[in-house]
Length: 74
Image (cartoon, rainbow, N blue to C red; front, side, top):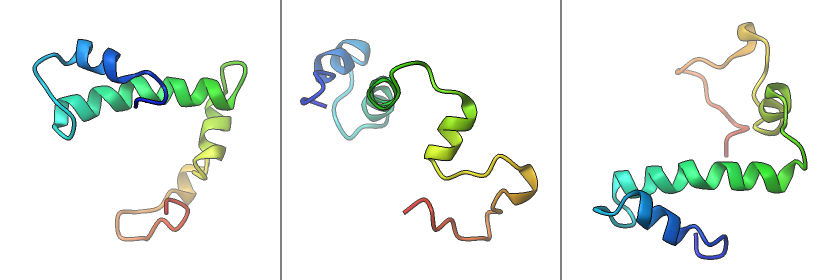
């Protein structure tokens, strides 16, 4: 968070929280995601580009079920 300068913004958005608490970590994630997206794509990506980067299939029939492992995740 410090390298991107987000700590101050997270603390301001979640003033009664601290790192490794649900509110603080969720707020940090919400602020981090757009920072990472803008670093990866110079213009707003399409949903398809986001899915492709996350290695998620666009076809609903190919979506993994809860019982299936998601090897592309890790």
